[in-house]
Amino acid sequence: MFLQRRNRILRQSSAMRQLVAETRLSPADFIAPLFIDEGEQTATPIASMPGYYRRSLDLTVAEVKELYNMGIRAVLLFIKCSDALKDNTGLEAWNPDGLMQRSIKAIKNAVPDMVVMTDVALDPYSSYGHDGIVKDGEIVNDETVEALVKMSISHAAAGADMVAPSDMMDGRIGAIRTGLEENGYTRTGIMSYSAKYASCFYGPFRDALDSAPGFGDKKTYQMDPANRTEAIRETLMDIEEGADIVMVKPAMAYLDIIRDIRNQVDVPVSAYHVSGEYAMIKAAASMGWLNEEKAILESLGSIKRAGADLIATYFAKEAVKLIS
Image 1: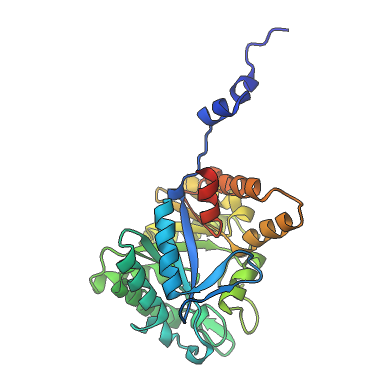
Image 2: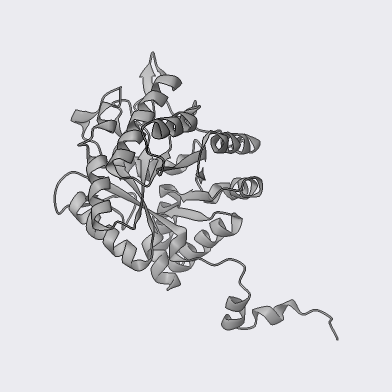
């Protein structure tokens, strides 16, 4: 039998497969999410995220130094706000001496070249656990946007390289961009959670920050998982309003959305490999049902293959060790 084309020729050895690989992962692809708490020399394990921790600021700085030395160039900061500071206005979110603001300054002082991205949403600061201000059982849009602008400006003043609004309020990207410009923060970028779905895969994250909604759910502002074209519309609007990077969240259950958006836009596309996706791999691996290392690389490879330029993932550190 004579064949004109034998596709297996390009698969016959590891060296050959590496030579013709279409998708490659590198440390610079990853954004490492970090959970920060008050205190000193404390690292609190997150039960639903095995191997991940909520660290005090001093240990967070040490972690950032290690990440940078490994080749990771971006971190995404989340803080745990004490219950005593939570309210329905978000006041603590723009406190210049707040934990987030202190964390930004400490990290930029310790590792100036690390790109520091900050979560912008009210849920960690809300007595209701929602991403916005609550009135008569409703999450109100415009007053929330005003609070998010104050929050973003305070992060920029502390030295954040990028603010990352994760709230899904209408018009917040344009308002934040205007606020940054008016206050002279013309070098502060915006990574918008443009297509953030009302997903069940966020559960472990809410455990990490004690930020689960106190009533109802987040379906009146986060996107319906049934919808596809809506994600394109949301993303294009965010770019028009001034977003520098757009994000799809979650990642693995929404690979089609990542590809759709990648085909439509000319700005960098990021994807968030979320806590539930992390926890599933960890849980299955702990039972011996799959090979954890192979699952990490295959999962992250699928996200990049789908079109993500950047991947926020709790596996960032492990992935760098594996691809090295």
